[in-house]
Amino acid sequence: MIRKAFLMSVHPGREAEYEARHKPIWSELEETLKDHGVSTYTIFLHTETRQLFAYIEMEDEATWDAVAETSICRRWWSYMRELMPSNPDDSPVSEELREVFHIEKP
Image (cartoon, rainbow, N blue to C red; front, side, top):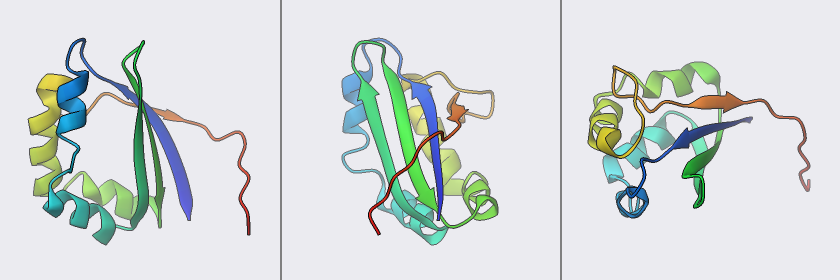
């Protein structure tokens, strides 16, 4: 299993709407993520800085990268664009984090 973490952010005053749009996410998007090998996907919000910390566990990088090419992912990005800094292709601006420590109970 591959673990990934990354940072994103939410525009000021849009935190509640960001959270509401994730309760729940679209079922088709959830199924697409699972079908592409994502077993865990969690997003945390730092309320003071509006930073989002995302953590995923997935099967492999290529399958994860393929999620971005799906029409449902592209629609989700477009739907979320107004709430967060986004790239020209509507993907959220994100910064991948490097893992420096992990412990797991066998």
